[in-house]
Length: 497
Image 1 (cartoon, rainbow, N blue to C red):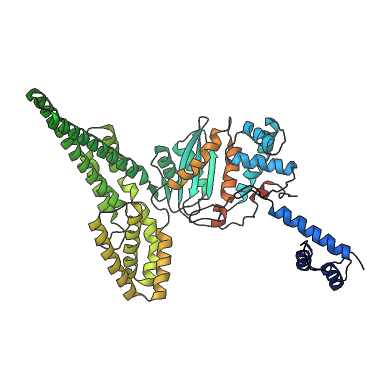
Image 2: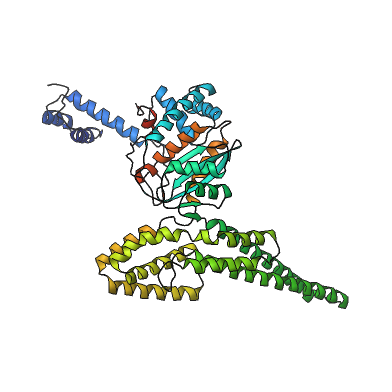
């Protein structure tokens, strides 16, 4: 009988090994198995030995916990060049790239070789960026970042985070910014941090709507509110400490000293508490205007009323002593109109929804959206929470009465898609700049090619988390992106062994 039988399956071989391995197996087992499977007795013994060997190997205790799966890779020129680009994308300097490749891939390279490879890929990236034409129509935001003494101009899409422009300029004046915005093309709205150069560039480019950033106003305002609160509590603690010392004192002279000190501290505490409460009241009024929807009407806030209120609050802060208050006062007065510029574009986008489902239904849904948005921003007092919950329920009942369930869900989806966009700031451009900064900081010299490579890789890399997870900026902008974005830089796919 033949010793090799390919028609015996792995399951059958395993069963043969199970019956043949025991030393105290029934008499005649080997002969029976050889006869049933039409193989020799030696083949049965070989299968039993193979099964015992596999079993011992799998049962051998190993390291505890999850272990990385071993995988062999082929270290060729393509992999080295790809690794050079990826390490540079992660912010590794050219000199450190050589150290990383020597340690990880056991390959020694020179810094000049790394620089030559980067220059080659940067030239390709510049050409690919020029050919990519996004199809999405969205509002834009811009910011500038300095490296090696020169300003870098960045323009980002507020919905997709797609980098429309990233360029090195010799100056950050209005003419330079205007040329950058003209190269980007038409946009309904441009947001910035109220820098003079950016504002001048927007005027030069003729952008109709220039939105200023609320975050640059609210962040220092609430920061100062927190500092005032900490100062007031610090003085109150000193008052309590002095009162405790007063209670422990027995001599008349010492009592007089503690009483004078306590009265002085109490006066200072009252003054700081009064100042803290007054400033928090102003901060709350400013923060209320940040909400896009007026809860009473369900419509967009009246811009003229909001501008007048911000300027009035700014005038109140003019009499306060301190540089921070003078800065906040100036910003409230000068930025007031620009902070509400988004309403022009937003009202245009909401108009089709109002026409399709009616103003009362959209107003009720807008109230619901604003109430939920306020809850996500910061905790509210219990009484306000209860009032908001009642308003939420009444608005929902109103929307249900006006729309059928299917229409209600469709209207809510369309409304939230519009309202959830970034309308009131340049935070997204600054987030991208925070990714660019370590890349520029690690390079002894950066040029336009470095920016082009960063721009392309940012646009092609999918987001790992968040509402844009598993989608790249280019994908969201309507462009076709390969699964391996480095192919666009002229690389071959990775080869594994």
